[in-house]
Picture: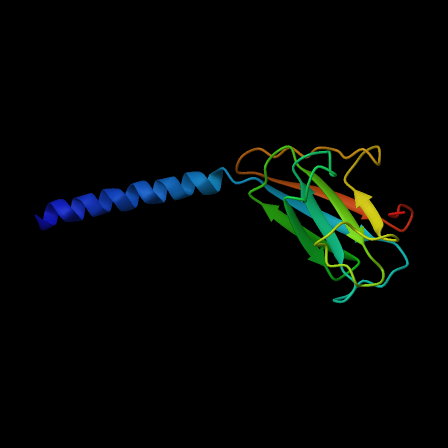
Length: 143
């Protein structure tokens, strides 16, 4: 009886480990390098927010995920993304916005795009990481 139980538990662990490995092999990751060249001060109180969207229509609802940076240059990583994905940045110079609502007037915006303001979709194969870069400044702001 104990041999049968041991064999059953061993097979269960083997299948569970196999399923976990397959799941991690399917994860899609986007690494976003951000550079803000604007005049604003970026720190713990004045953050850059990086949003991951599942649609190019960014007015259709909230982003899928939001990460922040407290430096003018840095990297954020989104894991488990759905494709295609789109990425935008926002810097609000007053330091009062927390990215829980639409950005207020005066917020500087950036987007991963070849021809802004049209966002470029990011496609990631299962188990892979795609690296993209966004450089933005104060040229495009929320009215």
